[in-house]
Amino acid sequence: MKAAREAASEVAGRGKQRPALLGVTILTSLDAAALKHIGMRGTPATQAVALARLAKEAGLDGVVASAHEVRAVRQACGPKFLIVVPGVRPAAASADDQSRVATPAEAIRAGANYLVVGRPITAAPDPRAAAQAIRQEIAAGTS
Image (cartoon, rainbow, N blue to C red; front, top):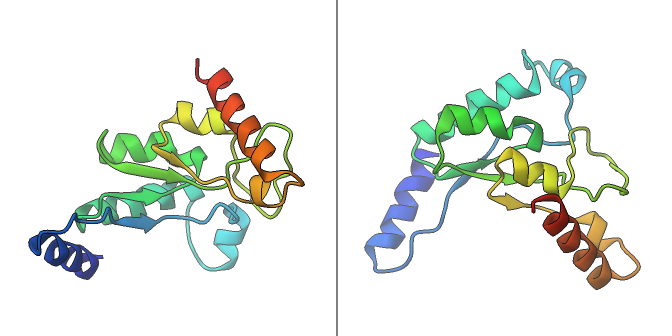
């Protein structure tokens, strides 16, 4: 992580905009049982916060974390720390292979800076209509 930060700083030193650097905490497809199976102790929340703290200490700008951990990561890392939330599903959508999902409005209310909405759009018969419906769900849920 420190090497990535140094490389990004070099880019910025050449007059280019420094890219935001993000670390990944716990994949949204992993639940507590899966973590235990791969040898990780603790809950997804405790692990995500610990990994977010490491990312911040290394100088990263933020992390990718489940909506379930956003509030705890925000509390641990502060208001300017970026949090990108994958596993975002509209209210009526299937969770697919994701264990820790949230609706777009839930993720935003939790404090996400950015949402990752993949399959609910890309696998939809009409991706444009799916994206518009998600946009409406966000507007309705955060008003």
